[in-house]
Image (cartoon, rainbow, N blue to C red; front, side):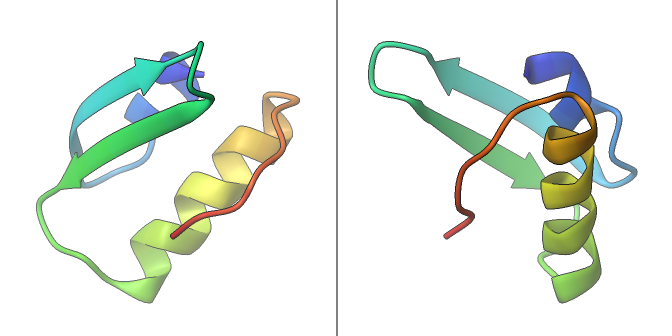
Length: 52
């Protein structure tokens, strides 16, 4: 999961809490394009979930 999120251009830091089933993502800028790319990267890697 961490590698999938880190592969997105603009992502600068990822912290995954597997027990809580959450991830906190820091990015250079917050835009719909980055959020969409994170969702696509997670789906491609076989992970589901929602982005908030």
